[in-house]
Length: 187
Image 1 (spheres, one colour):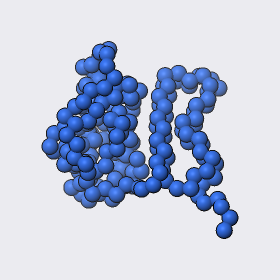
Image 2 (cartoon, helix red, strand yellow):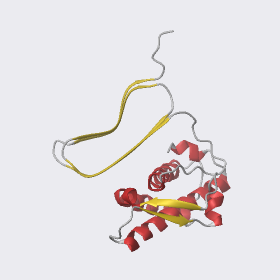
Image 3 (cartoon, helix red, strand yellow):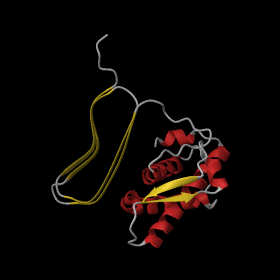
Image 4 (cartoon, helix red, strand yellow):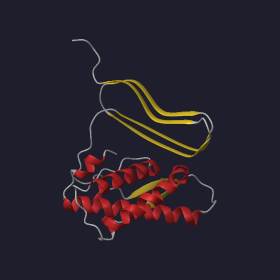
């Protein structure tokens, strides 16, 4: 997620968005711990009315994709922890706080991967146009990994999440590799 789009929210909408992200991440971490090695790839969970108020489409339930959660658990835990000072009211929630926007943006991106759906907040203007989304989660990498490779990008947005727990010597990880960006046609 572009952290700037969340920064366009007004004070109350931003506060609701931060609380939503914090609560959802905490619930996912609990579900993962309680689940242990249980079989099943997805689980539908109900969300509260207060949580629905934060989202533009006000869903009643979200579907947890545990294969994605397994790969993102460490990242979600770190981001949840970093967001805690804002959710608990220790630090003020300000649209000008770049660190807050980056943490919230990264956490939303991780949650969107776990839920396999966008999480757009009330009043938020997200960029229109083509979107390329790519997610890679690897325990150990011995070769090369490119999550997204695009030869020509005229417009739109690329979202790449690459999680690699261990890269062996000589291994290479590239999140996004781009060729030409913008309109490359001659007038």
